[in-house]
Image 1 (tube, rainbow, N blue to C red):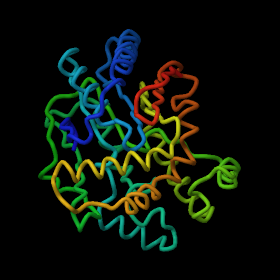
Image 2 (image 1 turned 180 degrees about the horizontal axis):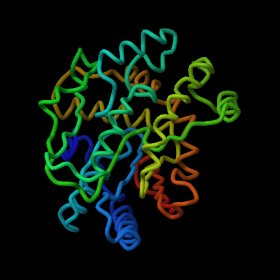
Image 3 (image 1 turned 90 degrees about the horizontal axis):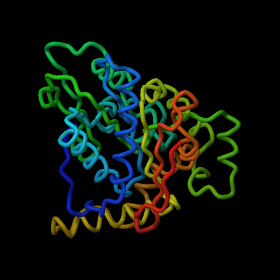
Length: 306
């Protein structure tokens, strides 16, 4: 849900990221305001972090600082709230029955890009006097398959934000050329790509083209990276175990189920993480991307401005 900063106990990682990230973002906002002193357009931040890395904690700290300390109305939006409806996801899966990458929500192609585009346009155009509603997705519906929440439950805002943070695990992914994708597929270091047909990977790659108009609107970008992407399996298992302890329940995913869950996302990490590491915003927005690299303990080992 947008503007929700509650963090479960099992996610409360010691935060050594915001002391690096917040000054960087404040400096970018200051530069933006000097360059555009009369604009009403919000400053848009893209934020990407692998699962379990501490992204939620960072987003919360960043949003609270901008909102409370700096007095900048801040809206946090998750790309997860723009998944296809349940019916549209079923149709996508049925149209591609052999492609395991799009049988469930998550990968490029499973989001409603026209809805996200329209939503951002309502924020970057003159703000409508009646306000706007923020789409929401309920992952618990249809036995966990999920569906878009009824519009009557969407959060309504009546004044424009000064800052928008769009966060998500695939935010900033740039599509590859066919040659580059083939090279990734044939790499001996690949963990999961060989489990899928090249045509199936090309399908999500082509779907990713539609996301680029969104990423191109970013004024700053934050990437929380890992020295070893394979740690995402370990971190996600730790999250699931912590959730069970916190709630005192026996249910939840087993370690093997978690591994299979992460397997669904890992091909995109393998394909697109290098593109984010090399820079999402291009030559026109130099020094507008911050990359934080964490170790196995999720503590920051390196920070780089791109």
